[in-house]
Length: 356
Image (cartoon, rainbow, N blue to C red; front, side, top):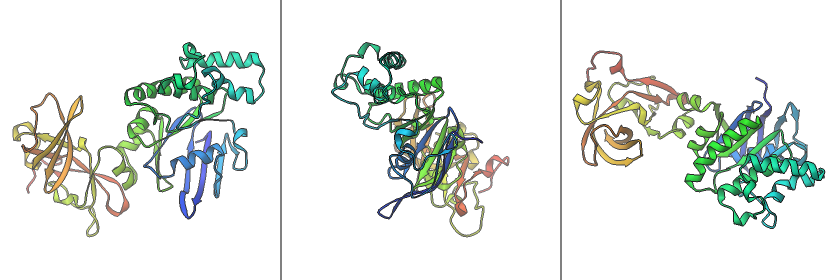
């Protein structure tokens, strides 16, 4: 595949700490990609090297097929939205948006036309004369977005773009940003540690861990087919078990060694009694430890064989409470044996009955 942006075997260390460790990935033209990983994983360092704010120790950074390692940030054709927005407090919304164009010494007519266009795009026309301190968090984020777009960059980079916004506004802005970027057709890359944000906004997710790229793919691919133990454990409401062979219907893939596994809520069928469950002979008996209302469903923590598992239960079914006895049928498990990630189906689903 031909990429608009590509990082090849990037290495970067700070005082002996490897922030980037042989990191390689690509982003196609017009694609909206999210760098997702825990704090300290190296995702912001990768973004800053792409922007020209840091220089890699080794490796190549290519934009539109051109190696830009030694190219100054201002010559890379990049728009950058900082986490704290970095707006000029003494400038109005209009002047903040026009700033980059004035630095480029564009003529006043072009500046006005482009600024008006971006004010309209971001829904800020009515507040064009206000100053940043007079704006809401969501409005400031839109000003930063418009300012980054003003010079018509070929690549847009965003560092934790929703971090400083409250939850309700954040959800609204996710949809708005995704739609705006797709309408513009601009290649974009954003950093986040929020899984929901990455899944909802990105066309492609790039998982970063300890400076390495663990996996890259669509949100669906990342979720349904994790390629490494880290991704399987990191994505979703995963519960890690040290020995999955303790549960009914599961045997080890390999003799000896570790039998670690990952169990997700959607892998578990939860029931009050045998009449409610599809395969009662393969079900585990457990005790409900806690429940959490999630709006469209209830999250249930159930203790099975000394292990706390997380399951989801429909609001249409009879409620469960802490202390209740319940049945849990584990449909499948991600095996993490030998450093590989593989789905194992419960043997009870392959037979009419299971002998325990």
